[in-house]
Image 1: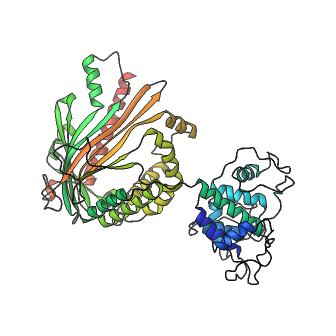
Image 2: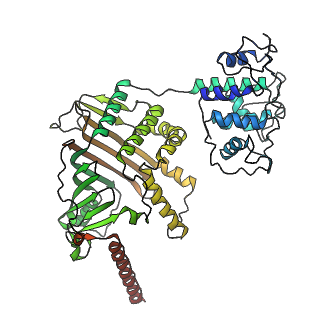
Length: 552
């Protein structure tokens, strides 16, 4: 289903009522008298400059609207991308036809269907078909209360006609009929459009926008683009609370198991934009082994690196100690590195576009500007805090807007070759290739299973806080997300994360703690890593075979 604004619908659909040569705007149409039943609708659209009528000064209220004309109007009104649509396969419309692109688009969207292998573009659109078109386009639903003497509940278009009636878009004729097989006239079409516009305007809610908050977001985004370098230091916590009591475990073992599911990690590092160079160091205590592990990762425009600080603990060969595992992007993506993989300027531009879409659809009602917040440490120097917070009660509305409005707008932005999504697209193609080889097991998950899962989920906490200094730099970023899940068989469980990250040294010279490898001797190549992993798998399979033989 596709929704589109009343303004777009009126401006394009109704303007297209001037199928023959149109005349300039005029005070009235020669064939529309003051007592004509559709005069108000026609006059309203005329006043808005939407319809102009024929060159002879008439409107032609009883002329028919064809299916091809309706396809053209809808494609334009909905802003549909008519390029590269699947061939609709209609034998009466070839690629050179004036209708082809629009018909392919509306057919692909499921708005207007054909007859077997024909679309019949020159046939008039019936009133039943028009009901379906408007109901699909506006995502209208009925209540089952409509009663037309010539429409039974098992009629193919009943739900669509009922939807128009429930939304006061079409009321039928005085004798109680709807006359679904009659063709749609220009007067009727104008009335349908006017009523649909009114319904859309009545139901349209404008997101709340605080201009001060928008200004802060814009200033912060602009400042982010100016950053050449900075350092960061903070912590990340992962929380997992799952009922895993085992009567065979001692109290100490049970405690260790619970500790293993909740991790606190310290993180620090450096970012440099040009040339791209990042270093991130994650330090984590492993209570079960009385060990502190340091994971070091670096990235450039061409490759990422993992510095091996403790080969034995990580299970790597001893001679890999203090070396770097190098993963060149061209190796990871099989020689086809996505273009502009780490073009930071394009990433920033993409984020600006994403913010515009989010603000347009969600407004700023979930944001709040504060002078201070308890999530920000006292020793941080800042001017204000920008908070984003949602509750479980907000989820239904947010999910609907996200699915119907936001994602369709974000899709072309994230498909930009310079965006980070190109990485995920490349990874996705590799996953798809694996799936085609049946390397990934197919899970039988029904829509009912997903609905049940979502019903049992509850958003306990979702809040993020950014402390902003006088230069519009984000000097501290903190947040917490927690989701709970109730299951009759497994009991209650929860999972989430929290973080607090300070940033400083903006636009200062970069100093790396570990740095990049200085020679080829310090590097473990991607091929070496893959060969080593394959050996581990072979050893594991051999051990499994031995265990099976011993059991037998």
